[in-house]
Length: 461
Image 1 (cartoon, rainbow, N blue to C red):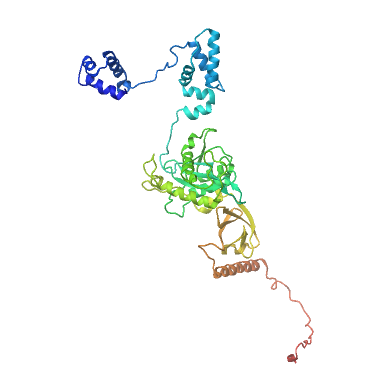
Image 2 (image 1 turned 90 degrees about the horizontal axis):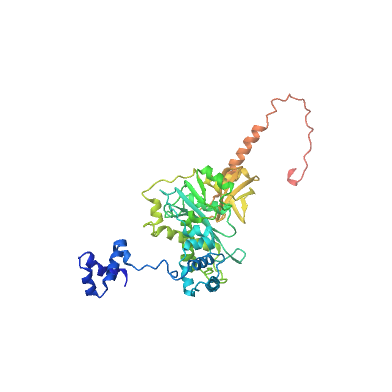
């Protein structure tokens, strides 16, 4: 009989004032039992009528010395098996002259130990902290107040650039208030400052997709102690953008729990459906997708994630970020942001037909004065349809790949750039070469002797 059934009987006495003796006669339950139920109800309410396991289960007929011996063995690392623990206990009780407990009694004593005590004794303070310590979960007060960023190695094998299986990484940037994914990057190899910069660049700047509205500069960036997050470059970038970086305590990922849960969602909802997934118990699956294809799939999943209802928020992350409408804090320009974030500088000599890079040719009329000069280019490894050109850290222009689908350079623009360059050079020449004819004294020169012209053709006669 559970607590609800006991209450249905006892409420006739509590609410309807039916005597317990009458209830005992009508229900067949002894008056002593009814009195005990009534006492438990007065002490603990309706919950007090439920059955509770005895705290001293397995101990009532066991000597205190034997119980202490069993608990000491159960809290010793490494803990012996129950069979070994029972055998040692029997030997100890025989030596002490106490009754030997049964195997079931030893098992109940071990099971009754406080789980937090067992975790701290057998697994150490780190495991105890992660499982049993009280955690205060905080949420930012508004969008873009706090962003979280972290990496994870995805549970999938893809086809690498060399045709061999490779395991990719994912870096994400999440807004703490709305749980919206503001930016991400998928890559192979170890996490680096470049991959972090690419994810932050996408998160901060405006997206081409109007549905992906998240952008702007956060007030706080919450990261771990990875070498890429603790680099001097990221620190200088944060100072320039007025972002405060907070590093989580080493070995304590609770502060980044929200982005960790997103990683789990990606693994269970997206990667589990793809070939090459490294699931529990899987050996070596055969990869079937490459890095660009996986990047597109994760991008589509991020779009779905941002627009669907979040269980804790009650609305979608996108709606939570947009809220009632507000203006995020933005960098002055994309060029300034790239100067701070993009750390892939390459030096290239400007050729007559543009800048040659990775088998492609990039051209811009602004490059006309720099033919033959060595300039610095910066680029996004995920999109090399354009490059940004700098001269001693000064932004010059965006050079476009000749096969760019959305922009074409006309011959008129190139010819205009050529003429402007020639005029600039002629002007410089005229300014640097002095006019010396007017300053020279006139000299007497003998007239040049007349020479007969050579008759080359018969028509010259």
